[in-house]
Length: 533
Image (cartoon, rainbow, N blue to C red; front, side, top):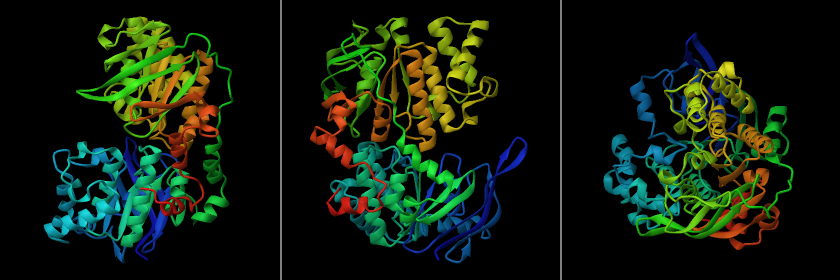
């Protein structure tokens, strides 16, 4: 057995002392085996994964149990010796590659740093191994790929480069912490295939942490389900997917079945928003090429496509952050000025946005009361008693108790709670139209379902129109009335959800749907056999 964690207890420091967050959890990983950890936010998945390296995040402490790696208890040896294990014997792949690389260093420099520190290979051997791994990861021009800086490659390429970097010292165990969460489906399948092939080729063991059931089914030999710092159940992947024994596990499986009822949408009326022939880009490079589609009144339109398709650039044009070189955006039948600074306060009020990363979208130094009060005062002139009444109404709309949350800071909220505050901030302006930019991609499936149900209910109550930017086909099927499919800055297909997806009528749409992981554990192996890159 390579890793044997027994009765591990970890505590977090709070205002009232130390609080348990892992309650005597066990985890074993054999050589060459991949174990999946799954559960909702706060289950303790990442804490357990980091514990496999003998590491606890700041504010946490080990309070009991053992972490035996290849016979050595990492909790009983000095920190200096634990550091010698990290990177050399056990490596870590983080969720956000963009935040994990040094932007000032070329990729090859960062790859070679680990072997140099741990004295596992000289520079020439490290570079040769990097080229070999880059090729296995299907990265372009493997011999020269490492000469690029992190900002010069796509998100999917950077994620694969991080997996390669984790393998630089040929570790015995790799901890994968949500490595494909923020990737579109076509990029994700390439990264998953690269990880699967590289792990099998090197014989490394793995701990794969995710909230995506279909992904863990492809990657893991065994699955452990966690909740509130405790194990719910554990079983081989095939058995777990077909017959989970615990009600909580079955509830995780059932989340994928959420569908909003089909609604009547008046597409003949003047749309809330109309995009007509938009061409836009940066410097001399066009990102959008004559893009056109409508957002019907009171409808939800999902804009889907892989990274670089132009989804977010379209949002920037709509919000006035990027001026188009051709075409116009109409709001309620009236042409919107192309630049944000040219728009009237009422035009600004009518178009709002909910961001993907609530962590960075909310001011960490302001309370929820302050965050929500600003749009109420700026757009609607509410102060004093009227503002407080509306604050309480907003909190009730997003299903958070006003007295409990209004005076908290964002750091005191969970990811799902912060995303609800982002929704409330957009609603505070009383908008006609809201852009939802990947609002569930960073959330576990139970929390994401709650956000989708909330958005659906709020739309029924207020009549607001949504543009949902997403790479998650499950989200599209759950909530969208209409679908716009984009690729390389152009609209490939558009129409009502059933027309676009059931069955997919465009070849690129079929490619997107074929890249969505299935609950069948053999799905990825079949796709690799078909030659997916």
